[in-house]
Amino acid sequence: MEYGVCAVTHRTIVARNVAVAGTLKLELGSTNVAVVSSLLAPPSPVDADARALGRIAQGPVNSGPDNVYGFAETRPSAVALIDARSGEVLTYGGLGARANAIANALLAAGAQAGDVLASIQRNSFAQWELVTAAFQIGLRVVPIASTSTREEFEWILQDCAPSIVVVDAPIVPHVEGVLPVTVATRIVVGGVQPGWVAFDQMRQSADIGSPRARQAGIFMHYTAGTTGRPKAVHRAMAHTPPELVAHRIAETYTRTFHLPTDGVALLCSPAHHAAPGNFVWAMLNVGYPVVILDRFDAKAVLSAIRTHGITTLSVVPTHVYRLLQALDQGRGGNCELLSLRTILVAGAAFPAHIKAHALARLGPIVWELYAATEAFICAISPEDALTHPGSVGKPNHVRILNAKGSRVPRGEIGTVWFRLSSATRFHYTSQSATAARVRYATCGDLGFLDVDGFLHLTDRRVDIITSGGINISPREVEDVLSDMPATVEAIVVGVPDEEWGRRVVAVVELYPKSDIDTAESALRAQCTERLSSAKHPRQYIFVDELPRSAIGKPDRQKAVEVASNHPSLASRT
Image 1 (tube, one colour):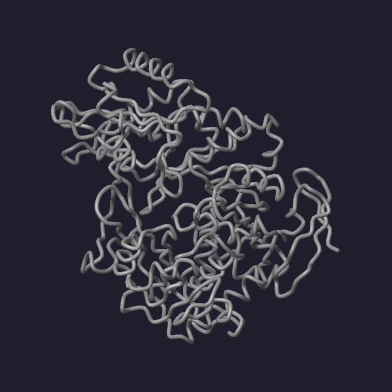
Image 2: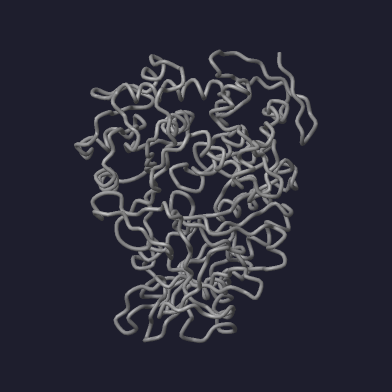
């Protein structure tokens, strides 16, 4: 038997090793925490060479030479991955051995540094075994949503031209026939398919020694942006040791978000998205156990927090709302969240009323991130959020420009431009013969810098609605609608209108048991009070749940479709 004491609740649990080769099955002797701080070995001292290079900043950081590859040697029995539903556990030693085997198998199949590996997988152990393998032999990993349509698969696969594809078994029928001629190795996870290499067999038959060719790999994410086909965003490859890059990633997270040296992370969003994917990779390199849920479910998340003593998670604002709603409905206070120290919120605008509720209910543990697939821009701490309400943080390299491209004074609204790394590239293959090399980029967001240099976002220029010749900010109207007690969140869109060009329509999600007629009257009164008549929604469409992307972002384009096809389009005026 192995015993551990939870650092949060101080309750003793019992874990028994019932498997070998780094895979554990936790049999709980308590209903409380299944992964405890005693399983986490302390970090190594800070590397003197790293200090000399100026990579170690001031503040509480878990820095030093340790990383996911080093942990396989120095802390092989420490827990790396946990399946929240099955209870299966993979240690850092087991993860390292599996990653080495996969890397060696890929090299034997002809993989070379710089090759593209397309991964179409749901959240799983195999997903992170693959990433850990690919990132030590210089591969570019392209995560693709398993929920994509055949047409979407075809576009991304043809554009990134992978030499290796790794696909969950149920997805194979959807990608066969659209794979580009560049694909030399097809790997199927969780099954056997003719013409495909079985992932488990490949991993079990290869050498578990460190691969001969070691070079840091990278993610290459596709982002939809605002218009057109998805585009690839990636970084120029460098002949850098994987251990160094992994350590830098861990250091960045610990320094930025003041993470302690011990903790337990939770993956509850699809990891093919940049934010949760980068989060998990960082946490593995910090040395945290990462608990994996295949999808977001508020009750399952609360259960995982309680069972595993989760300290850190990355979510979108919708998830925060649903967690708060589940807590309110359970009337159990915050007992299920006592272990939480840090909640990272990214991926969409964080409604002010939900953020205020989260800070009041959960305490000063909520960080809001402002980032794009192209770059991390800034984040605001819980403390700064109280002194600079509405801000997304204090960026170091942001310019606010007017329509002529000139900088505007502080306090004046303009387009937000952020600096890119010199290594950032766009349009990987067919979209451009030469990768774009630009210093600054924009997502189209509008905002301003206050007197203290904190960034406040006001809207996105690409989403401006022109109705009757008047430009209307959807965000401004949404803020008014979301400020009503019955409103969870609203998306304001413009739908085609013969007379006005675009008609302003509000798609609104109400709290359960709200009366629609009463809510609509209140919303109209609120708009009359706070907005000029041109900005008033001419129609209100009430839905059980706002249309969202797989990661939980409000989907404005789908909201346009909902509004355009709704029977009330002609009836509510």
